[in-house]
Image 1 (cartoon, helix red, strand yellow):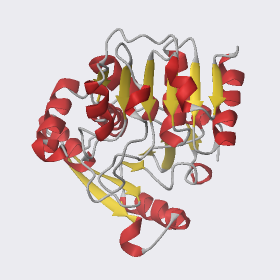
Image 2: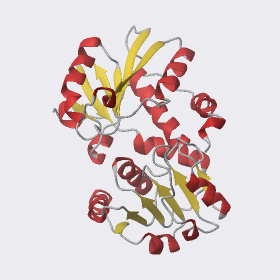
Image 3: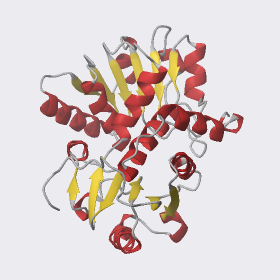
Image 4: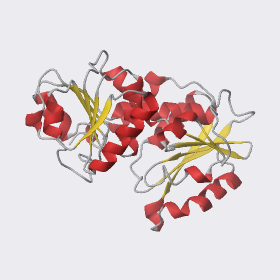
Length: 301
């Protein structure tokens, strides 16, 4: 892989009126990304086809990435979104990374330009877009982040960049939480981030909670946190959006917490990817409104 670059697409794909894009991942059949990308493109008089490349359909894993990326080059894909389990595995197969992707050690968006594959990460910026829109003025004095995986790591970087004074990271894999905290402190200086194995103690003095695990999804229902640990005055940010109204959000509202659903991050990621793929400015309010129509009442459990 060549040197790190900040390789944003800052102009429309030359002469393009049709674009081919896609998503590589496992178990992605319910993704709303194709609908969001194609609809926003239509408003720009651009014909964009967005293809789901579901590894589960063929019983494949990340080992299929080299062949899929070669095929994408050959077929002239403008770009690809990358999700579980490929966000880290794709990195050595790319020609360059944005600074954001390098720092986070994960890629969720690949842009194909002039035969080169350039890796980006819009997880952190996507979460921040939704968070600031849904929870303006939220207190970042002491934030608890539940989940130190790919999404959690990106959100952790975003929180420290937003000025979080204290970030406590809790994960079922305690060494992973500690490692992320150490990496963050090395990256940003100081000791604002810390790992913890005790969610109860962490939440006691917290101003807010970010939930960044799969618990609460349709296929993995449940509560990631005992609602008794939440209290009025806190805020809760969720990344799950199937269903949009998770059990955690219902419990948090009942305890008097301000909440942000996972749709904000989904839309923010989509906006970032669209602009990277096309070089065109997405209408954020329009993309969000379309997303809310897509999820509709059926998204609430």
